[in-house]
Length: 539
Image (cartoon, rainbow, N blue to C red):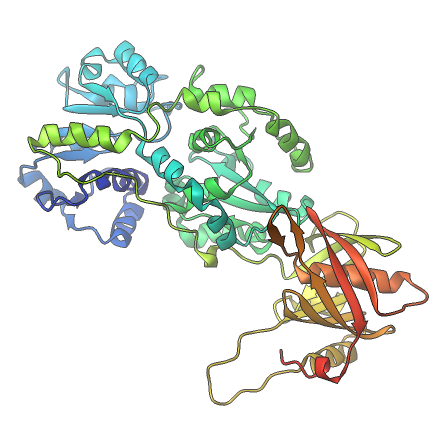
């Protein structure tokens, strides 16, 4: 392996040997890559065994697997197999190999002394075989079409879509994934401000944003600088996928993709997800490739404020045909690869089924709840209130600022018209001290003169709300039920809706039931006078 991305491809293929104690896997790092440090870290996380490069060169191997044709892999003794790397061969990197040819089809990388160094060149689509035959006939003679093991993992994991969305805290919001390849023409290099800019114009309760970066970008920058560069978007609730498996889980969970010319979007297209283009052009994308065809078909995002319209246009496009030009034989890659690899090993496969490993759910730690402070827009029409929330630094006009205690900064806390606090699990220590809902809300109104409403969120459906002039109420947020599903809005958004309704009414009577439009659905909010038991609930 030469990079973390190449390692991830190998890990997707190795289930072909499941159940066979005769096959022992060892990994080595091929020298010369700019991305080798992260490859070692990824290998360490996989718990696989490592050989030094000198050890690997000194042994004869039953099989040598690689997902990259570059580097000195060709000197390792044993039958060498070049596996699929990415979705097709869509890019040519200036200054590398033959002009206008991707490395996977380039004789510069595929031949040694005019002869192919790989005993088997595994491809994902018949068109790739035709292109390889045109550029490097001798390598094509040793090539076969097996499909794409990574796509098969996605297809096998599709039934887990609801689980993945639950892990991300998506709810009924529309999850939009921004995908960026690596290099100077990538979305992150050309439009580094786009993730944060989108969070400022998209209502938080309607959209959730996620970012999928090429593993080389994780390697190039490192987690510290990457997190620092993207801090405004991450603070606003954007989810950043890990470079292995999580990116695929996000494609399953998402509702649409915004992409540059990186081939990750072809996997999304294969799943039927709408695709919006955000590639500004350049020299890397090869005309006539599946990725070029996808970008020609997809609507283009030129301005963050135009995303909603671009998504509507993308939903009317069926981009699966573009993916069909990159992937053959869906669901068949591992059985076909097993036959080919065991042929080279001169062994008979074990009589056990071979199937892709299901993708794990995204880590909950990678899914922040959202900003600690919101600029809130509301519209009160009788007993119906529509509410939209944006990060506090949006330039859009707002009705009030709402902040979460104790996570909002001092400036937001001092300026907020609405302040809320969520109940925390009981501490596991013998000595504890905690606020009651009544005590905390009274303290906030006493300490913060600009605060008009303080709310203790006790459960997703139950709050205590204290308004500076209208009084103290218990608030019940009823879930929305439709088509056999139970959908809950963030009660903090409902608190903002109730605050606006109370401020708009010269005569405030309770009990009252309000209809609150929050994101893609509406919920009923029942407001009643609070009693002593409500005030004594512990936060």
